[in-house]
Image (cartoon, rainbow, N blue to C red):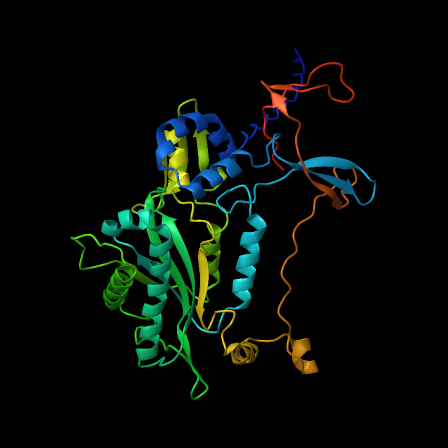
Length: 415
């Protein structure tokens, strides 16, 4: 008896998994809009004028109720309205281009040699004084930090000359607590103007790099800052620590240090991608724990989160970033330093063959809007178009092309 042939099994098709939709990013403007009334009820009396201005600017940043500009396509003449950004330097949604331009400018001004990142921290006992006299204490903090490095550079047995540094003031810790400190990006080199010599620090016997003793830096910085605060007429606390904290570490050619310093220069103290959760009562954000080196979460009320962000708004007109010494734009040795960069920087083969020095790369241009229809660049033809006035959520009058009142949009437009 012949066995019946076995039917071929039907091919099984594996269902294609449905991609998980990415949740929309939580913007700082949406958090402020949700908890602004609670925040003002709790922190109204503690707000400074600069913080109040920042609150209003970030609350209306790129929203449907902010001023708009009319963009027109250069190819197909398509038009669309684009909301203006607030342009505030504490807004994480703005100033991305300005941060990149700052990094490019500072990178072009890098001097040959190994760079160090020196951090001068204000002790906890002086933070209350810094909060009540921000303009004075912040300026003294940056100036005394530079004077300390300049004196060490002049007295160093290898350098014996004028140094340069890029200083950036930070007022926050990783948990966004009030923690004023200054980062100084400094090359381990100095220029002797009398002899016309450029001296760079040699490596140690162990093969690493060592610039200055951090304890000696802290002692000199302490004396300079206390003397500067007394000269300004400020009353110092009775109990002050004898040992202050100064950190000094090598950062290679200095480019990575500039990227780190430029991260919080124009875009506030928190990135919007780090705001991971926003409920009806609380906000959760992500930060990197300095003890473990891993990401951690911190949850607090919406009003407390807004205050945590606003307390790092600097006084109006205060420059967070400053160049000192050889890196100052008005340095009298600037022409000599430019020649030094050209001599010590390797040039392309084409430029060497022609005998001409390669020019510095041009700074990047501001990105342009692209047309959604044809992809061509769009041109701004009108700015500061004020939105319609809404009364109790209803537009006063009728909009063109509609038969009834137009409701005020609630969702924010993000471009």
